[in-house]
Image (cartoon, rainbow, N blue to C red; front, top):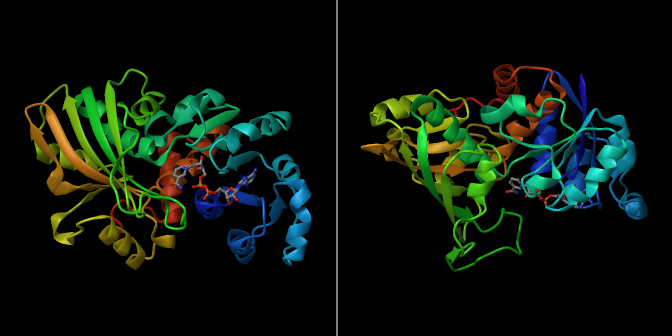
Length: 340
Ligand code: NAD
């Protein structure tokens, strides 16, 4: 069993902890929290050992009646690998601690690419991170783009990709985020950082991205235009994408008109937290004009990176091939590619 520690138990950390625990070849050593809030209560309810991320704040847990198994350094020392799901920038600060303990760690998409030895998306570059000390599981948007790019590149070649990313203003629990009533070019300058971030996975890809932020919390939506190197039929592209386990090509008859309906279906299907681990691509939107492919996809920002973190554990420790890891991860969490 691979002993995995989780440092940072928020939106991403709690989901990764649950997904790691579901794997037959992994166990969660414990989770580190900075303070005894509702997420600490969830960790206790889930039966995870809790570690204090900040030593001076340890008494606060006792005051809240929460037993602490140790400090974060104890967690790192007891783990074979750590998933760092701390807020952006904190992962980079933690890097020295992981290196001191000689414990490999997975940072998240909020960290700069320069901090790590490599960036990761299972479908794109699984084999590139074996034996690395610090790996970054890229952001939700970059993950969503790379998963789409992989089969298109292999089947048709990509001359140029342009994507407009309509991004949710914040996650549902982020009451301080916005906009509340506006549509913001974000960033105003073009390209947005997402294109260069995709280049950390596909260095030679010609890609331009534009970003917007809107008053929504459920998912991001991407408007995609790819100039391919050949001109396939739209149906062939649809079949190609539908065959990918982490791409869900939405059939028209489901009547999923947006993120709300997608998340509703995920909840009805019994997905934990109504999570949607797959990219959701509207089948009807897949259109090919000469060599230009167009489509819309929605990406659930809180959960698409979760199976990627699980695969990155195996990739770094080199315990399974990419396809085998993806199969295992999918099976263990119930990722079936059709939200059924
Ligand atoms: P979050 O704020 O929901 O969770 C972070 C957790 O870490 C919180 O519980 C916080 O209390 C805790 N924390 C703060 N400082 C800490 C420390 N020093 N040690 C341990 N824990 C600490 O954040 P999140 O949304 O889960 O994001 C985590 C990372 O994942 C970021 O890099 C982010 O960019 C990336 N990411 C977020 C999303 C998303 O949509 N939420 C999607 C993909 C990637």
